[in-house]
Amino acid sequence: MKYKIFISSVQKEFKEERKALKSYIYGDTLLSRFFEVFIFEDVPAADNRADEVYLDEVKRSDIHLGLFGSQYGIENSKGMSSTHIEFLSATQLGKPRFIFVKGDSDEGRHPKMRGLIRLAGDQLIRRRFNTTTELHSAVYASLVQYLIGTGRLITGPFDATACPNAEISDISEDKIRWFLSRARNARDYALSETTPVVDVLTHLDLLDKGKPNHAAILLFGIKPQRFLVTSEVKCMHFHGTKKLKPILSYQIYKGTVFDLVDQSVDFVMSKLNRFVGTREHGPQAPVEYDIPQEVVAEGIVNAVAHRDYTSNASVEVMLFADRLEIWNPGTLPPSLTIESLRQPHSSQPGNPLIAEPFFLTKYIEKAGTGTVDMYANCRKAGLKPPVFRLENGFFILTIWRKQPLKRTESQPESQPESQPESLDEYIQESLKNGPKSKSEISLHLGQKEVSGQLNKVIRELLIEKRIELTIPDKPNSRLQKYRLTKKGMAYLRKHGK
Image (cartoon, rainbow, N blue to C red; front, side, top):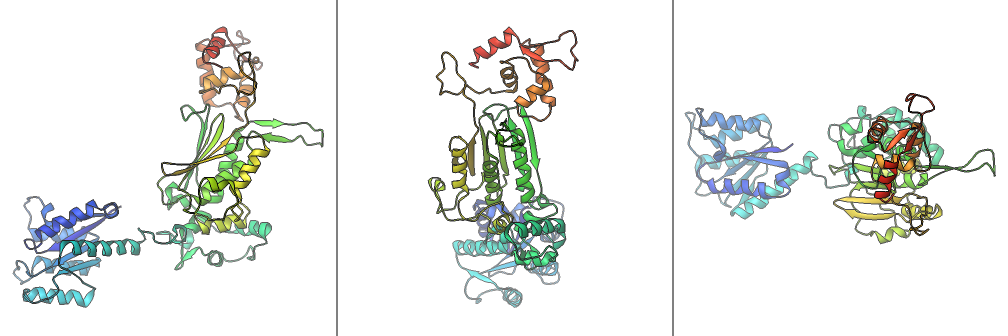
């Protein structure tokens, strides 16, 4: 949304100033994002009285910007100029009025213009200017102050500023109760589970003049994305090592920041390969994933807690055949570097009011050890070290998956087998060691259930005769499996699989 500025002035006297001011606003990187300008020169020829057109524009405008000089302007039958009438109309309509007077002295001005300047001075603060440069500087200061006052321009921490149009009724009492229960169990938090919602928000500094701030909505909002659309998390599962279709699974998660973390971690863990051990040391067989859950959770919670919520982008969690990538809109604090993340460092949360409830519920530790723990847990699991990088406005984390090593006559033992790039290659790869049913192929791909996309690609491979049925006479048999054909084997050899 842009604010419309109506520039009112004596037409002939300020012809050049109007054009220059419009060009200045449209040429400024900041102002052009928030404002559009109406000037006299914008009106096309029409069968309408000029004063009617201007008054309609005053009604449609958000800001009345008046340029007062020496001349008063052409008077109507009641002895009033259009500049005077427009000022009175803006006043009656309650429009913000910014008045700029040319010249330090009022000598030599038309008497009625002196009277209009006094009238304006009785109601608001005027600004004087002598040159076009001074006018631009004064207008810039007034418009920036207006943006700050309306909340469109944030000068303090984003999470601490009031969320526009949000009320206490937009806070979920159930989510507050869940938080209090967990915080008391995790950190022995002082507030009881029956503490009133307003008292909890006050204690956590989540109110701005009685209104919920952005952190309050993100933490406990009934529908946070109604106010902050891009606070969602996009989770994708790809078959190969590149961001290419088809996408095996694609979910967009909404809710509070706690919901986003939980849902995103569950998404990744459900797609990872699982390795089940023996019951040698107890009745319960240990289960390991090709990325430890604590590493996945640390990466996702950091992205959600520390991202730049003023960005139009969302957090993206992408699982590939060889790695997990987490794309987080934002950058590092100035005092931190990529290299410093390997060592213990001070905790510098991007959204401190979000970080505090995350700490109280043990989603994070406020000790600057998160990335250090990630390195240690990857090393303990036998994974390559995680990689951090900054690219195109994103802070990107790459976590490598555990890859089985296989060997051929021409392949050294230490070289991992090349990864398939598409679902059809994945299916054929899964059949290299013998026939499999659909459910077995699905498990090999990390899916809990047979997807529609998997059924589609299997049908295509059957048509292309790269795979075949083990019971061709009974295609719907519950014992049906699929195996590679000579054509399918030749395809894999050709592609180095």
